Length: 94
Image (tube, rainbow, N blue to C red; front, side, top):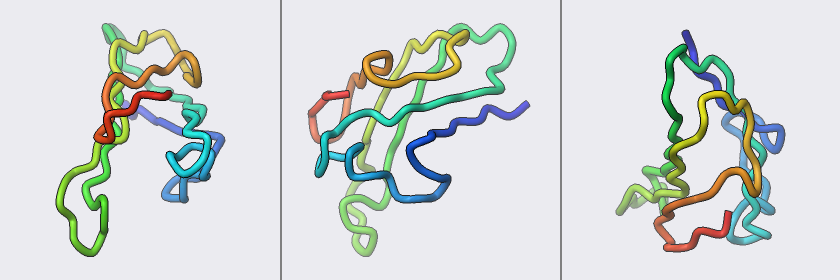
């Protein structure tokens, strides 16, 4: 079984549009997922960036999002459904 996470806002391995970054409106991109295993109690999503802030000189693993307690029956999330509980920049605007 494969858990798949996608977004209509950008392609796999593509750049995240500026509106979904701190240089833009910092709005959470719409997310969809499928393949949640049976009997799952809740889902979590951790989005980190191990080569931030500079891919040539990584210093930290930058945490963009930590989301948890996502209902396993949900198949998509976007603002305001997805709430960030922690980010490396100490913001939680999503």
